[in-house]
Image (cartoon, rainbow, N blue to C red; front, side, top):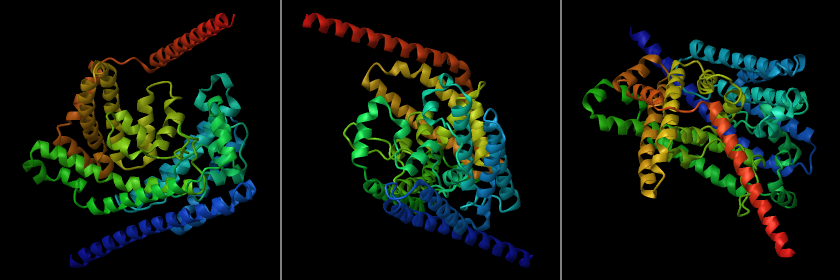
Length: 500
């Protein structure tokens, strides 16, 4: 028995050591990627270097960092990308997007299941399936954008789909560069293919030019904005978040929410406060990873998104989060819109906009499948469906009653902020606990209160179906256009009369 216990302790020590080593490798690789990004922008600038050279260097550096961080597991990145590129070439554009989604997601799921049930269950580490999740987003986004550009009629596309639609098949080098470039191979974020190619070729706003943006685009051509200030700000923010996480992550362990003594002896209001604090202290690690990844892309010159009204350059084209908006969110939708932004865009473009039936449920299920094989993920996203429907019902039916005065609006915002934060924490606990048993134990300690309450709200408060809401939006937009046209016509007539 002593020998068995010693073996288990040694095995656990090896697991912890391996996990720490992988995390250190990840941070070291990201810091090297940051330095490489500055070099890439300064010495391989599009004005000095051909797109082919930029593609080759970005791809080789990405594969080198992947091999350093994950060893030969990084070959999965090439296999997944190679399989889907073959599908794109061999199948027609009419159904290519469906096959790519099926194959890329199946390959990712196979790797995730193998890691969970063959390797150590529940070990948080910089595992190789993390980058594969981002590559899966890129593969499927690209396939759908090619389908939009080469298989669908222009009049059937939404304005967003028109901007991102791809009119030609990418070369093998462009494809691997997009999927495996050093700026995003370890932690993303996902970007559209058109945005990435425009960055490589040195015209980052080319395909997004609009009539209203001509002035800003002319300004860009005259003087390319420097990202240095934004990079310094984001790097400082990311390491501040890392320090916060390392300082407080052990103070409020999430597991205490399911401790028997804690449930039995701590008052309900204190349990609610502790739940909020325990989940609040888990978020800075995501802030660190995503903000640093954003800084790396900006340092290379990628992520420019035009100018503000005051002429300041914006570097948020591929940003993955807005920290203040997350912490001050007053609705479930606002929280989701500012958390993992590029994944939300991917889910919207690939699933929500295209799914004819129950798009909200389908989107949450796809998100759960994409995240991995842990049962806690599915509990979180299934709970998210119920809470999203209830939040939508409350917003449509209750919010208009509080907009008549600033005081009422402030009261509404305070109440909805507290409700949103608790609902998010309640939803995400299984995502952290991972297993079914502990997750259900937590929900039982709350008597499944939010589940029951949200189901009742979703049933009791009517919300128009999505297609009717879209019709109303189009009708209102048309009415505003007609009104503006009439006003312009009246002004022109009045001016002509004055001139006469």
